[in-house]
Image (cartoon, rainbow, N blue to C red):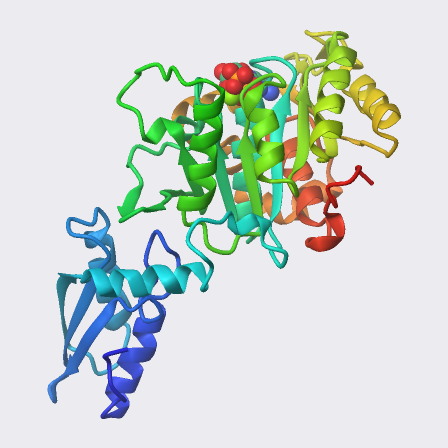
Length: 396
Ligand SMILES: Nc1ncnc2c1ncn2[C@@H]1O[C@H](COP(=O)(O)OP(=O)(O)OP(=O)(O)O)[C@@H](O)[C@H]1O
Ligand SMILES: [Mg+2]
């Protein structure tokens, strides 16, 4: 670090305050990232800070400037703050990238490192439109509210929807070949939708899809995550297999509806899991019923599909595959998606309920938000780490 030892108590306080300023995308202190070039504190309490941006025209330059100003304004004795922005040299950028990779060779998937503690959930379904993407963003948002470090890879190349569901319009920042995912509601999110123009259809086939997914997983800097979700396209096609191959430690969350064709879905999903050695963590039934104004439940799509899939998968795979929850049809969920604000954060019970105080005592499950938060809490409390891993032989 070019910043030398503090010359005065005030300078020491200024440096401590700067330790609290994070790069908005990398989510680590700018002091750790080599982004603090110089700090000058004059006798009258004026502070000048030179900050090095990772790239010229960094879209978050104003955020970084404001965060530095805010942090220093809180230091007693500081009367004026000037922030000067400059851009890293290629050498400084390389040093930053090395630090972020933690000394890893360049092209590896960090989630496959033997010491990775990230749980990776691939959210899959047998057919389209059952609510995978909605479930993914809501579980992710609820877990982020619980304090977990969460990321999403939108692996639905042809029907990407995650940026819209999270209200993300900003493209990712690139630092040379490294891609920094935009962050929304604390969730680091990357989607193929961020790399295509407007509504252009993406006409990619198997090998290109595999390659694109591999690139996401290697070039995108997620940092240390507790949980990574992959929102898969419908069905048991190329991408589902690619995910199994590229992330052998990932587990499958299967989303289904109450309809009875569910058993076939279970067979197909089970055979992919067997092929790839992935564990199926559980089944989530969505669109289970609609609560009528009188309070009764109307089972629009029938009933029992989730339980049937869970039972059948358990038989096929030889270990219990629980039904993790049943999410009702709920206009608020759809509205949250359309508005880019996940319903688990938007609904009346709100983020305060995420810690469980309200819903552990009351009746849960009549709103989609309450049920999604309950499932998120259950998944968040599962032990992390190597114990839950498939060894790539056969599922245990
Ligand atoms: N529980 C629910 N209540 C009301 N609407 C829902 C519910 N779940 C999903 N929807 C709506 O159904 C539509 C499809 O949901 P979503 O996009 O999440 O499904 P998907 O399985 O990801 O679809 P695809 O297979 O196309 O990727 C969306 O408009 C969404 O808002
Ligand atoms: Mg989807």
